[in-house]
Image 1 (cartoon, rainbow, N blue to C red):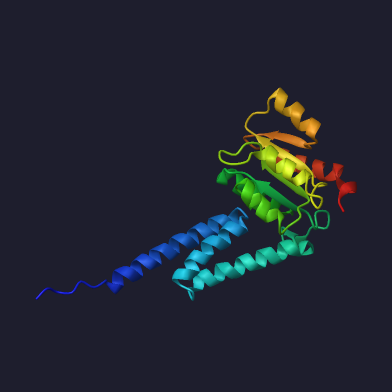
Image 2: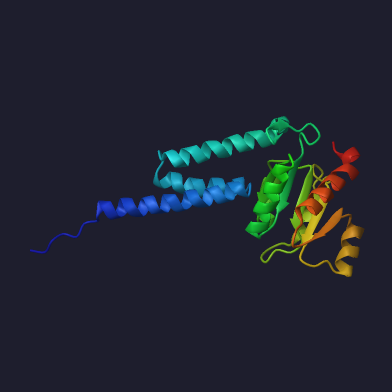
Length: 215
């Protein structure tokens, strides 16, 4: 008589645990880039496998707290102190290079700004549906889908966002790109690789120039 083939529960549990651990590692990376929408999607996958996993629930709480802080900008802190000069300043950073995105988010937080990240046009639009930033920093070209100028036009054609200053990142800024950007109203271009002090100086300059236009 043939032995019935049954699934090994130990193997199933090990596989599920490995998948959850992978999802949690990825969620932590996404949170580091302030890509909260993508982090929540990944977290939902982990929750589907282990709804009561303490690590999953802890990260879920962390994301909820981070989003509440973004919605309450007066709680932003820098070096443990309230930064009155930058209170309420939220910056949206859009770049498909995750290293650049994480570096920019870390720099903004270090200088007392709130930050939210996106790795594509669609992710940026989703973030803008929930948050109104004081400044947008975006790379010019994405490998797939709409490019940076498409995001610029989308923002400028949105009445609730049309005033937001726009700062572009590019590996190379040609004369034609610079002229076209300035004619369209792009506030500034920064060439990669990025220098933190140059980026922060540009951020403060853009915010200062548009201060009177903030609703």
